[in-house]
Image (tube, rainbow over all chains, first blue to last red; front, side, top):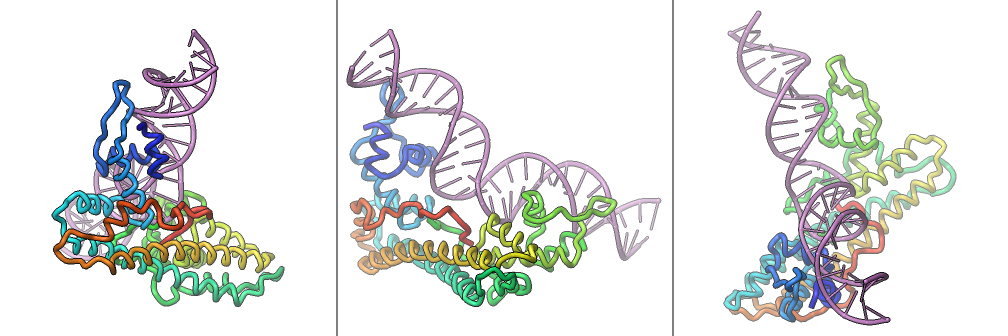
Amino acid sequence: MNIGDAAKASGVSAKMIRYYEEIGLIPIVGRTASGYRFYEPKDLQMLRFVRRARDLGFSVGRIAELLALWRDRSRASGDVKRLALAQVAGLRQKIAEMEDMARILAHLAHACHGDDRPDCPILTDLESSPTHGTPAKKSALPPFQIL
Amino acid sequence: MNIGDAAKASGVSAKMIRYYEEIGLIPIVGRTASGYRFYEPKDLQMLRFVRRARDLGFSVGRIAELLALWRDRSRASGDVKRLALAQVAGLRQKIAEMEDMARILAHLAHACHGDDRPDCPILTDLESSPTHGTPAKKSALPPFQIL
DNA sequence: CTTGACCTTCCCGTGATGGGAAGCCCACAT
DNA sequence: ATGTGGGCTTCCCATCACGGGAAGGTCAAG
């Protein structure tokens, strides 16, 4: 199976598969005589694992940890659970920050008549408000995957 | 007022102020004889505007639009409101995606006993699930500011 | 044998910063 | 006057997870 087919079958683009191989997230696969990468069914399963983990918002670094646990048949499920819960916590933190933004903005927009007149509480807020409640500082947690 | 003081007073780092000037988000300020940037109170107000807009998650491009409206005394408040509501919609979309991720992960983690045994439904899911419901594709909306 | 679809590597760009180096400049203390 | 320590300047590099595209080799079908 060539990289294109592996990409289609796994949902990971060929570009990404090469990138993951380059950064060491996935092992180096075999090559044909002409230099084409060749994928086995087990490689496909791993690619799907990676794809799925990315869909759940894990960073590449975290996926590396997950893959290590996956391969380790003597892993402790507690380690996996810890990673998952940390990811949930990170997601919830980002969600909370964005909800704050959305709430404030929706409130301001609600107060704006939104017609041809120039008066606008949104601009007034941006202009004067030094910072509403929280300084919207970069979240304490390390930056992690968004999409 | 030098750039360092402007940074402290506005909450925008000196690095960022230079960057914003370079990309044209903010106008080029005056310089002293020795080449130091010099900030007036009105520049400070604009920097605070930018800072506040970023705190609400607006991308630099959107902030440029907001600034243009801010400076235009004959603006229509409807234009401002549209930008704000679009931002709210973008935020809510991202929030929904992340809530999906968090929900799925929390569910999987809940089903994992999290002890020293290797069995783990989280890994089982990542391994087998081709893609739960939505393919978690990159959101239709253009990528925009997260933090 | 040609054509078109694949594959390869390599380099550049994204967005919004932070880090750091090399080199001026300024104010204040000695 | 001279040092010293901080602040300013520009410039380049790194981040993170990719996508685009160029230049060139390969493969399979017609």
